[in-house]
Image (cartoon, rainbow, N blue to C red):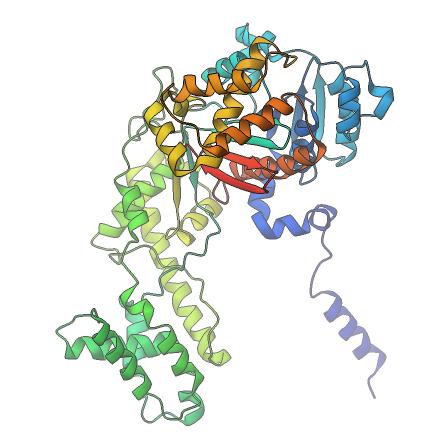
Length: 546
């Protein structure tokens, strides 16, 4: 029978296992699993400028306020109408009619998350663009989102933000009826956490000394049956590759016949038919012939041409080409040096992460420690190279940023963007896209035509099927025959040129906010091009990719 003292010890021990999560962790628990503390910190530091307080704009903001951005500004001089009261759920119905729309929407938006700071500025962005102080205000935000902005104003805004590499990205959203599109303007976007399905190398064909020693010294023939049935598949494959190379002039299996022979060699290492670790090794044999030193996608980044920066753009330093991401490029260039350095492994840095495998705890922990020790040594070598090549940048890169880069070095992404509206000027490219993707390109052209007509008559009185068709032909050429999909898009926009539907607004709210979060956190891979939404047929597609 246990004593009271023993009972207290047990209670103390079990209660000390873990600390209770704080309020922020409980509030943001689900999203922290998606973008971790680093992503949440980036969100909480962000400042978002939203041009418009329409149903779509407030739906986008809803999905940014809930996950906890730092600050948002609603910039809108519009007065709420009966139409706004009917489609914008952040207005106070009939009571908001005749009052400043942004000011009416603000309280309910702030109510969603009391940790988010928000304000309504009752002016038009055209006024800000007229003065240097106003332009600097726009440039001070982390991200600018514009919904159904006047064509000329949007072009001027896009030009302002494109003029310098350090300016914030712009997400331009256009919608009417059941059709919509959005486009993110950025010079360059670097992602070290794309969260893709890329598989890091386990160094099976390039084993580090400690791993190769284990595989060579393990007596496969004389170990006891239990140990034999729990040898990790990594060790099995390293041993099999070592023996194969000894018999084939240091070559790996290349032809289909050789690959089958290699798998047969692995099967022959089994003692019993039910040894699942050897079955797993055979299933993982693809790593032997699909494990390059540097994946082609990463090798392409090593030879990426310098970014063509605007003349007025801020310089990043003499040792790096112009870029809004100097730290990332310093790491990327160091990675290239690391791969070719005499003291390096001749491949990308090792990831300490191991997949699940059929083995016992002792073997798995031993393998995990080997990989961790090797990853630590390679990180130290990488850090030395970084400090030697980019001493100034190295001081600004924190430990977490470095670890993230090295861990994901096999799946890095660098996206190069294009200024808003530039694609439309390339008539040949647009016509080609119209043939390849008639629905998406046709809808984009129709929305562009609508924007042009609404800039002339904001009430939509000049928007007709013939007028829209004429504007589309002005973009692609009079001799180009428009596909049926383009004609259908023209018909829908002629029917509802200024209609903003709650379901379209809600759908766009989720999609655009998702892209905004990708840009802010620099995690996941954003859409690069015009994302076209057709809620008549429930389809989305991307055109105009650089």
